[in-house]
Length: 207
Image (cartoon, rainbow, N blue to C red; front, side):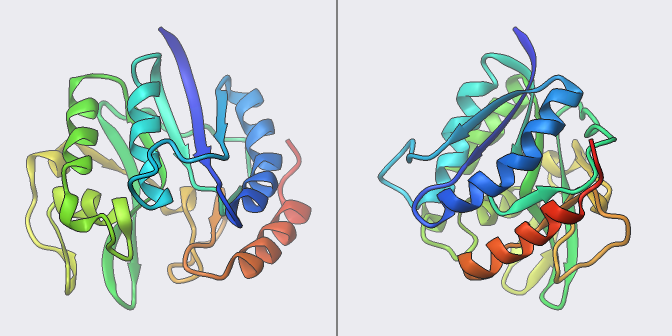
């Protein structure tokens, strides 16, 4: 089994975003020893595009010890540090005006039965297929977060084993942090995201 991989997907108007994002993914991957898997077609056409994240990760966890998911609308602005390796999985919890909620735009998974079972459980949340947060809604529910109103409700066994990453690994405009390592732009029109990302590529720390 190989050591580490980074995966992402960008289809339709997000394919352009992925091309921009990849300009920061590649130096980060080279510096820290990741194989890079970038997709521009859906893996499962029966669901909205964000759901393809789940089967992509499921397949890679059979080949790699650690898999990092990076959404197509983010930029690694400071590649000097590597993401921590959790025993199960890790992601950032944001605090926004809507409430506290994990964000799987930057998501680290450690290969094993737990990670595979969790991805299968996410996929099984069929009532959330068309939710505005897609697979992230399913992830949040399984971790014990309420979707309406937004916020933590209970600590589930999945949540007990999840590492909450430093917010600098997934800084979004609605939950800003200083000294971000990754800047992420969910919720904006593709053209706006592209403009933010192009700016960040010019200002990012040299590798």
